[in-house]
Image (cartoon, rainbow, N blue to C red):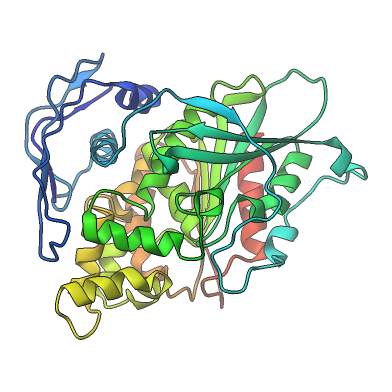
Length: 419
């Protein structure tokens, strides 16, 4: 549980992340929690001496795990504060040249070789596209430590046109990497976008073995000092927005974000956390974590990263994984994921920016029923903003799988709102 007794947010939502994250005057007091602690635990922190231009919120106690929050700026501010509690030492955002990855690391037992869905992405009819592509490989240093080195792959088309272009950030699924996204990057680059792929935490160049991501999840449960499931990568995506908005070839008002599965969750939370992501289209990623616990529909999601739940089951003295184990794991490795920062609060907070959610109607990891409340609240939020830029597509007969239809829906969405 993370309690905030004094918190702040800026009046201008487009600058909230930049100022909060660049401020170095946060003093956090966090009680020590024994690494082996398997029982309910509490983290408390108080933000003091926060001296940035902005507005102070009334000093009322706010709980990350509990209580409804209707104001998007307040919940966004809380989420940013949570991200700061498990950060390594801050470093200036710097860019380091990198080389193309020759042998990408996939953490699947059988590495993938082909994606029909990605290959189907609409592409401009350019005969010599390969010759026209400009490839950039670089590292962004988002914080101290090995995982603070964000590998980035950028594709665009060559030319002397100085006009700023729209950009789209792509996030891969569990156990894959940015190189896997290349068919999407090439397709979008052919249509005039600057296309960006990154390795999420403990994946791709940020992994050293087939169990790096699994080990990081278990370590987070044991030690409570990192948030490898979703949240740490969102920090990187906020820093990535800092970089992208400063590039000469990118229109800073036209940056979109999308991803598949785990990447869809990254896209969802990055769009919630940082309003500089002007358009979002998460694919098979948005779900109701609390709804799944309450309605006994958590099994498929748990099975996708089962090792950490098995570790927790053992530590908690359980014979099998049950809803109590699930809830404690989420609270430990991603505080607020099944409460304060769940879909009913964070999806509506993206309004009025264009948001497309694309899922399979039969997806057990993202049950459609679990999106009823987020969908209703999102329509209300977009209605209050006099915007019709929210859409949820559930492809009939499809489980947890990205399809050509989903790729086409996302492609059309970005063309509609970024071009």
